[in-house]
Image (tube, rainbow over the protein chains, first blue to last red):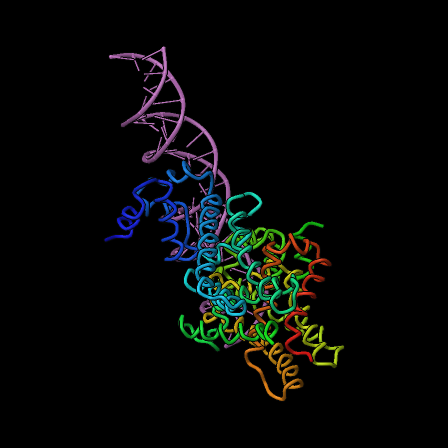
Length: 204
Length: 204
DNA sequence: GGGCGACCCTAGACACTGTCAAGCCAAAGA
DNA sequence: TCTTTGGCTTGACAGTGTCTAGGGTCGCCC
């Protein structure tokens, strides 16, 4: 089954959906630099201009992909904490899910944080999805802070986000390979050890 | 004085230097997406092919810029901790310097961590400069850990790097503007408050 | 039935990009 | 004096995002 057939089978419904799926395939296969409107069209089996019927420009198709990314991240985060009831465990599970999401969808994750490629003030849907994903994080961090000290700790929210985001980013860029290796398992193990450092702040 | 003249005046010495300076001007003025070999040539006042006489390809000129970036980051880091003698103060000063460097040289900083644009295994100089900058961080984090517990704490190194790097990245991408504002001062104040969270780990 | 608009698509052009190939010219070394 | 080297130019090529201008096929309403 070719890539084109695969894409076609998965998204026979609407041409817009087919273009988005072709874009996702392309982006994970060739990376962000390999993305082009013309290659998307080629993979979707249409002319180079067809995508412009469904998206006004390149940035808009990328914005739609970003929105999907934040939706998936939100879903993954919720799924990861679902089984846990202890706030500290939920906190750890969330951090791990964030890193795992990034490692599993490297190009997609990078795109979600490239403001030159997708300016969120021009794309409300992407912005809203990003906010929803962020809200999940806020809830979980607040829980752990309130359980521990009885009050919210706004700085802890941004510290936590910065930590997991930096960790994911550095791993994706290969900056930590020398220390943690490049496989999914070894990287996740490394992430666990790093996340535990910040957890010292929220544990007795 | 035009941009071309400015570049020429600053780097009359060597054409290679002039090209690098033109690239830096361009990159900070137009961002990473605005960088092109032809525009660099235009700014340096030479033909579109001249840069290829000094750099084999686009990636190589970017690699040279990356190397300079890590050198500057290293120098800034050393300068920031120079006055301090208390390990905890040095630790905080380093984190602040990292964020300040990123905020002061946004496009340059982003480029330093874009492995698709510059693959470090192909560019030894960039790799070595990155390592030197990293070594400064290792020394300062080790100091604070040893002072506190008597032994090194490798996970703290990566936790610290992840935190400052994530913070810098999220700020550069505008993801924290809603909470910290977009000015240099308000962002640095926000960074201070976030960095203090991790410092709870290394303080009594 | 005939007209009409919405939807989906194509074809051709434009200016831009990175890079290859070929060659020009002055200074320097043998 | 001849040759090499360093620094540059011009011209081409295929690729890009996007503009303009059109074609075809539905379902719907008169």
